[in-house]
Length: 172
Image (cartoon, rainbow, N blue to C red):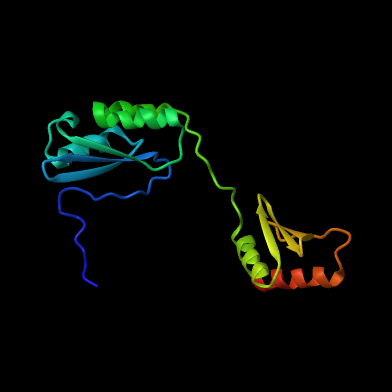
């Protein structure tokens, strides 16, 4: 497999790594393109423009890629920047705006693995915040909590409970 040259010695290629970034912006000038994640420090935008050799962001093309699930109103404001080129204004807005992002509920690694093993062995598993619920033939058999505790409804037989316990211990 041949290597692909990504860094041209002047500008940086697109990358997404900032945990608080809301959008990625490609700034173009002549044949060069620079990438900036926003919100960021204003100096990051100034450096990108300088690496391109442009005098101002107004001399550049601006393309915004929204990387987070945000409100339609904020999405429209972000999209307007491609026309107005007010990148510093958008950056400031995103620094001060309270942005509510949709987040997945965290599930522990051990619960993910327990879910996989139980599913493989004929159980149906429902993942919830803090626990997974184990079903067999549509009936709830047990709840496995993030801390490893198992609770079973009163009508779960010892054999079914023991099988779930064995599957959970196999994961550890």
